[in-house]
Image 1 (tube, rainbow, N blue to C red):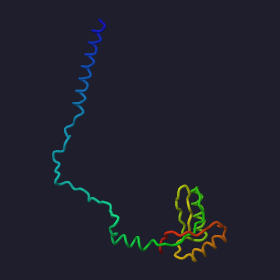
Image 2: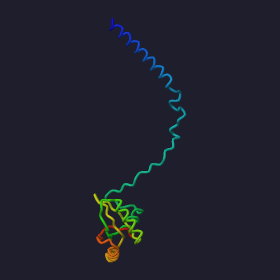
Image 3: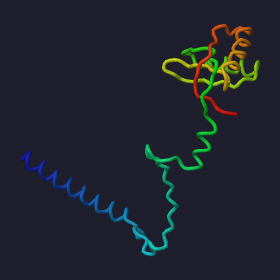
Image 4: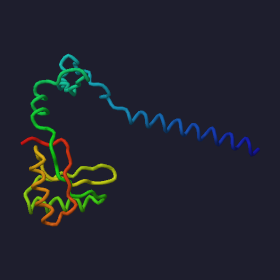
Length: 151
């Protein structure tokens, strides 16, 4: 007897669930699923902007040649410190900018931040500034050869 009642109860529950889903589907559907007035021939798409791809043996475009070749050259900078503390490197950079009005660069070379000063085309100019830095307390400054920005 127990099995028969449970079977009947399951049938009633299934019927209630079916009725519920049908009613929900009736109220969930709208009349405007598709816009019948849409015309793909009138569709306006934005212009596609692809990145410039330069193959290894291709020449650079003219507008890149001026920017690259004219602004970066071999030269010298003075490395004032190398630290793993970015806040210290930033504060020292600000102090040097304010005190000497030199360009400063912080370069991350894992795990250290290297604070470098200046863009010098000749080693003698870099040496003069290094001596000035040493005289003002930056005793461990040294000159490094690197790529610099041409003025």
